[in-house]
Length: 123
Length: 123
DNA sequence: TTTAGTGTAATATCTTTCTATAACACTATA
DNA sequence: TATAGTGTTATAGAAAGATATTACACTAAA
Image (cartoon, rainbow over all chains, first blue to last red; front, side, top):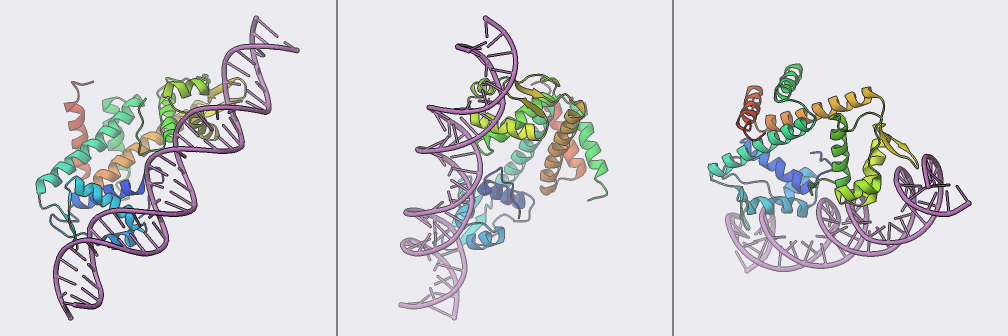
């Protein structure tokens, strides 16, 4: 995995795991890879992985079971809430940025539709 | 101005100035506030402002005139290119993120339209 | 020619992030 | 009861970013 050097790595790992959970790649109750394994997979230090996981445990997206592993929450409602939070945050960010560039609401939708159409061949 | 502590301040200042230029708030050829004044306005250190400006000068969005000030490029083409670069980058980012959350192209457009509609009363 | 206003650069110090490394705590199982 | 696999914590050091401070270089105008 490649990281953006403008954002803390632990923060990007959080988002990466958010995505895997929301996308259903990691199911509710499923065990995550061991922290040391994640560190190897992501080519970062164990402490960096741990920092990401600690925050997600505090947010109750993950549940830590000492000696056994870290698990995705078994409460689908928490995952659904996370998903909606992420979607809204991303869209709000885009809207705010494009609005600051003086694009109208209609312009914004048009630009997005244009982007989607012209990339149809890539997907 | 308030900054996101997850991204370098100098980088956020660059984006802030990009926006003011693309939005036409700072016209081609217009003189920017003095670096020391910008530092006061943004409540950051002069060196932090300078770093943002240096990069923009290198990108030829700004032109430095020692002893006189920093000026927005007089070439509208460079500003237009910057605008398109920003728009594409923002949309690509949103698309990538929502796609990773398993939203379809149609879902993405729908979510955005919904966001725009339900915030109409706020604007 | 002096002075005020401007950009530019350097130093030292602080904070955050990341790293390498080691150690400790708990669980399950051979 | 060992041992392997797991989470957790701590220390020391490196790197990047931000700060305060000082100084230098250039321009315009009094």
